[in-house]
Image 1 (cartoon, helix red, strand yellow):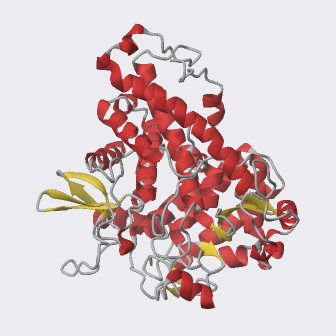
Image 2: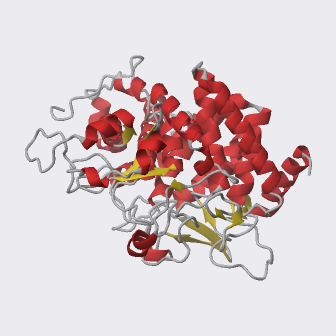
Image 3: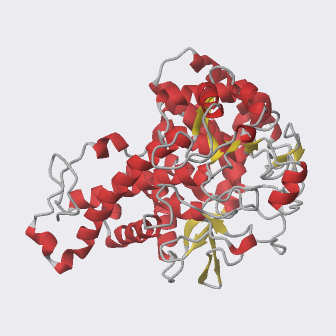
Length: 500
């Protein structure tokens, strides 16, 4: 099939088969296109927030702003107001006989809420406002109250001083037991992006209401703010300032504890253990034996990446593709670190890209680790599903991260990155239609269609459309996921909350 025909086929599948309506208007896409309308299996006929991230990004590039706004508003209607889950957004929803039915984790394996869905909502809201220019929507009370509920959920006292978000197994894209509990990379990077987005959206509303002057300083002494009718404004000012402080701590914490390269690993190996007190070099008591042997060759001399998890005595050095790509896209890591990341991915392309870009994590849990840490999960066998399987829906995240970088930074590595993008795009063009747009692929090289993979998976289809758009239509659109800059917020004059 010629490339242009393939693109038209993918568009037809999205617009004619995957998009569904709520309240008579298109709202989003189902997880996979059913082969038999009379036999819907599992919950693949539902609208997942996570799965609709690429759908909404693509619709924004296509100028379909009303669909995206309807999706965001529908999710907002379903934001939980229950005591234990107040502020979370549903994992998925579906309209049955005119009634919206939402899943807040009560139907998931392990009954775990999808934390990433809530974080993605505010990120998508920010991207929508930036692309559409719809500041009026951002300033509505419904949107602003929804943001306050979300911030109240994720910015609260805990039993740990660390600025990371503690979650159980199954709380994000890796939705089954895979020893990712605790402070997994993907959740921390999404938390960073969500806080940036929330602050940006709050600032829009405050500017619209005249509560920020030209220097972006906050006037807490404005008598209007003492009026009980303006309680929301007071909450916005407080939580915006609190979120900015949290963002600074989170970025510093991530760069200190999650980023590794060959030099840092050498330092970790030589740190003393069993230390106590306020000032210690090895606060998580990492023993040399926990550093895997494969890491030295994996990193090489120039490579660097964000490790999968930080836990006392149990660092997770696995490479998780989505968390690292988003870390670059949201500028959590510096430009120099982004070059190191892309160099590492190029150096290890036989593992991460192979015959179906891209592998979700590397290396897999095997043998006794697989048995103990996954609970004998047959879907997560080594090199399968989320245990180092290959997910074509991830490639567009890599494309947008690298294109953002190469457009901003001139480097000898840019040609290397461009070649990597083009070669793997050709793999998608060749294999995806042959394999019926499968959900995921198994095996060390990603050759086999996943044993339980659904065909005509929507985010596989739309991931291809996004990759084609970014590489062949308009590479400058790689800026669509640009979020507000922490540097701009950090330079703002913040209130003294203790005194005021």
